[in-house]
Length: 160
Image 1: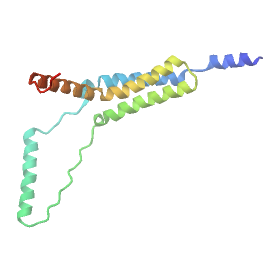
Image 2 (image 1 turned 90 degrees about the vertical axis):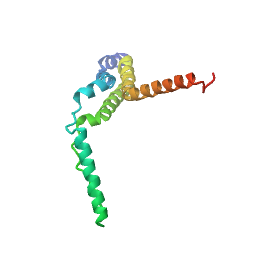
Image 3 (image 1 turned 135 degrees about the vertical axis):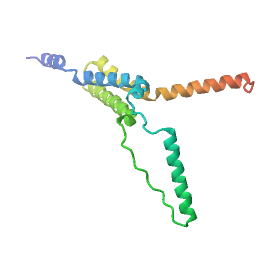
Image 4 (image 1 turned 180 degrees about the vertical axis):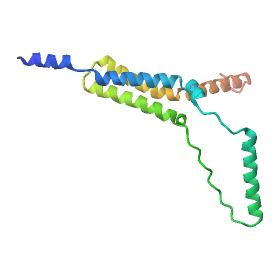
């Protein structure tokens, strides 16, 4: 066998496992990041306590604190019982981890000389998933700054 035949066969048998896995994971992470506000509204647990109960608990804590001070007792702040956290509290960490793992798979695929377009797409979608996690915050900041600018423009504080 010639050396060219062996290298041609190894290039043909080169699998695209990392590129495909990276692309699937990155696309999944991007879809979850893009729809995060709607998903979290449906999956987040509802609060069982009402506003009145919360206000009554706070008033009772304040009363106990004041009576302890009047009696001259040393007041120690009791640590509240931590409620068990729901998995939706860690949503951003989950999305960033998925996007990062897709990005890493894409980089590994690119280094292994797997299918270039597929590996580059996995890298791009991994980065897009990480950016989309914070895109809603950036979008809200831009809208707020535009509103402030329009209000100040109407009040003639800014002369352009």
